[in-house]
Image (cartoon, rainbow over all chains, first blue to last red; front, side, top):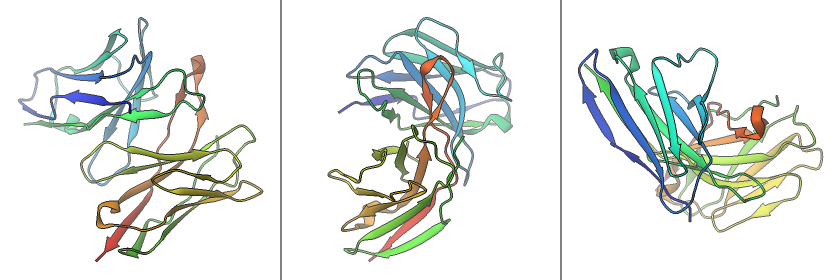
Length: 117
Length: 113
């Protein structure tokens, strides 16, 4: 089946630093990937849609200059949290849409837990 | 955009069937019903989807009412590993032709030994 990986699985950083999270589709090419954020005991919230070779589409209220998304290849999308602050601490999850399937099923990565001190 | 309503929590005995309801009374004719689940501290896992016919796969069955205003996800023989938050999602068409999934609060299913 389709497998999506994320790296790192967890990261702790100091306030003010930038953190990059990678999302890879391991056995398929994904023209579209999605980035979600999940705070404790809350549901997933879509942050942005990442399309290979073009700019990401951000959801309302998500700062595009703070959450930089790059989808430079068909198997890799990256999310960079710039100048991270404690309120950015969250569980970040990516998903990839499998092309060619009639129902556009999405497969999710295992998530990256970010803790900003 | 169609919204869904699910009970916040449910309990089920191990080995018994778990029936998780979802209301989507404003669903439109071309919107599909998707079910995902999320085990604690993991990414969501796709379970099943359907348009109007009942569907079954190796994980679960999906029963959609004739008027499509509600559906039920059935786990025929629940195990402890099925303890998770189950999300019922109606697909929302997004710009550029790519679909995005909007997650509600889901149902926290606890399977008890």
